[in-house]
Image (tube, rainbow, N blue to C red; front, side, top):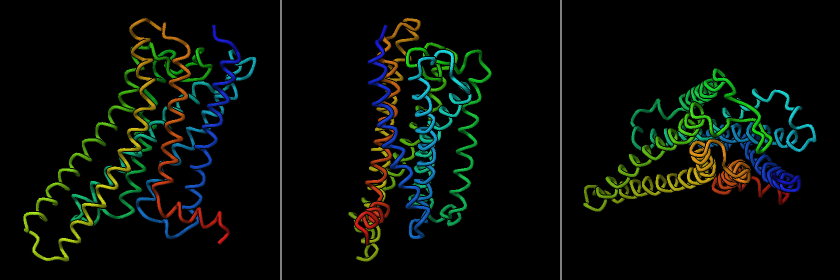
Amino acid sequence: MLSERFYTINYVTSVIVSIIGLTFSLLINFIIITNRKCYTIKNILIFDLCISSLIYFILHLIGCYYGTRNDWLYSQPLCILRAYFIMVSISGITYSLLIQAISRLFFSIFYTHKFLLKKRIHWILIFFKWLICFLIGIQPLFIEHGFELIREHRMCGIKTNKLSIAPYSICIVYVFPGSIVILVYALIFYQVRQSTHRVRSNLIKSYTSACICLTFIRKNLIVMKNILIILNILMCGGTPYLILMIWDLIDNGSAPRQLYFLSVNSLVSATTLMIIVTFYKNKTVKKITLKYLSGH
């Protein structure tokens, strides 16, 4: 049996990390909304990512509040609904990275189709992303105790030893979008290599054309690097949950209770780190923020 001090330390850590992530998410979205120079497709997609993160952080903080109460076992209002929206928000984060990859695919390979490069298409992508995310969370609602209070960490979610739900959740929320992102960037990387070979083999005679091509290559590589860094952070954050799920399925729910908290806190920490990296890598947002802070 874990002591109350253990729960308190973990909840305090989780709350602090969540507030940091919440603050950066709000900051990024505030800068994007209030500055017209930020009204770009890239920032629209980042705005959507931060919305998903905001929902997740808020729901997690609510869960922490009820988990620290003395009557946590009996006072968990809207537990199933909160668990549903947590799954929707986490899906929203991973699928936001997927539509960012699709957007980069449009600009890198299908750039001759001008309609794919318009903001309207990307708003449509965002709409369908949210539609998919809301549908993803519905399946556990039709299974008895699909969403429930997990006593090990006193929060609402999916019990990892449920064979009918746990593998579904990790595959549809992490594995599927992550695999598609990797596949998309593999295609882009192949295109970049082909462009590099064309430059080196003197197929591009004009110096100006060569410079444009090299700029295109460099830009794609930078974007690929940034998104893959963020994806790796999220995947690492979800790894403890995967380990917990496998352990629980093999030993029928006998995984150490500490691992439950590790799976929750690692995901919160990964999401916060992802938002911080997103802020740091966005030069426009970072520059405007520093300008505000300096009073200019």
